[in-house]
Image (tube, rainbow over all chains, first blue to last red):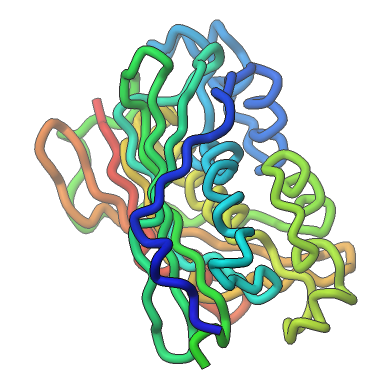
Length: 149
Length: 142
């Protein structure tokens, strides 16, 4: 089923701020098999010029989809989640995410289009600190296989 | 930030030595837990097959993370990665055995940018398939 184009431009704020903890960064780094000490050891992070341990570049996937996830589950959108695969992903950084950050995430559905038999939807998530400092922006494009057939 | 690679010491076209990253079912279970992505196509073979997949497949983001690891291992400081983007062009199929699958990542300095930044183009393969395309990282060098 074609996705509802009326969702383009809709914005979703995450229901709560995301508090970045050392424990979560360590867990995520372990899950991707990455032993870099800058993810685990404050002294190693400080030696590299960071105030605390930082998160791997793909870490924002942990929290950026919470707001948009609600939108994607809206029956009015018409997305069959079982047929969804990840199409494209980009992370653009102003500075690394680090332990102690309290982050605000606002997600916007920026595009819905048909590509062949598939429906393609892009969500942009802007991540800032509670003080309004930009940290990173995530661009997440998903593909619903057969959605446009 | 303190990248260990100096901008003046890299050239356009320079290769970054390939690395292999194994992926077994346990890695996908850990990744599901850490990322919060519990889509059953990443851990339930029975479900994966009912939606037309050959077997359980890795999270695209797991594969992207291995490409990220390749870049951060090269540059030293993960904070040096200022932009990282990929297209997921093929699936990484992960059989339920002791071998699992292997993701092989290689890279090349595609362009030297301003402010001591470089554009690194990545290639990621698993088996005969190219699993990432248009994989690019902008990295701040020293």
